[in-house]
Length: 279
Image (tube, rainbow, N blue to C red; front, top):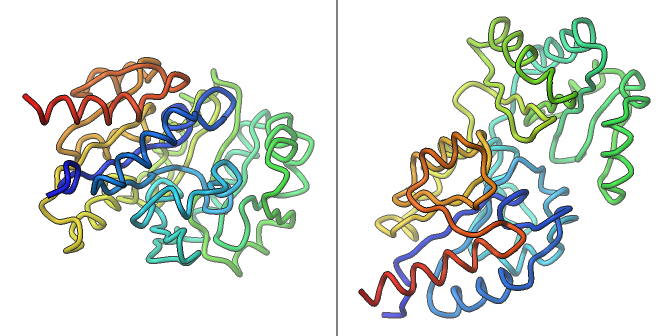
């Protein structure tokens, strides 16, 4: 048996696998190849849409060797085949309600939705917002749709992202939970970002489905994340892992806290697993 044959690693991307400014960390890339060569199964679990993952990690189809979780659990995607394995769209009426609520009650915020066809779906109303300008400028290769919200009804909407000043995150979260809590689940996925998916849709739930596949059942799962949208995934894992810069709540629940994402936390994890096997 190869040394990592019974091990699965699932990692978040931003703030975890990726370094500063969403850069690739060469140490991580080398370590993952070593891990796979020795029988390990590796995947990513991210809030990004599939297009956004490819833009950040162009070689993702070769990097992972099992299906990946995107849209915070709204979609299971096979990057090697460039195909959806399964997805759980949110209700269009709920998505529209979130957008209208944010536009009305929090004019400093902007919204964008996501589908498989479009990485970003937003409205003319949101385009002048500084966060949307930043997103559109930074993610130049993402397919974008700018239209009235009613046009979004044509697509399977996997989530809606609210971008806002950090001090508005708590009141927006409270408002969305009070109004849409029965059908939607808002989670903070960054200091200025709230992701809203269907109730019960999260990285942990999709990871549970993935691990029930006979190819992975019974293997030891290490999950690594840095923010509160990773909590369900960390709770499901056999071993929960975080980088040193993780959110306080994530550090509190993690079994292992390793180096920073800039230094190569996944490489640290693979070294940890290898040393642990020799004990």
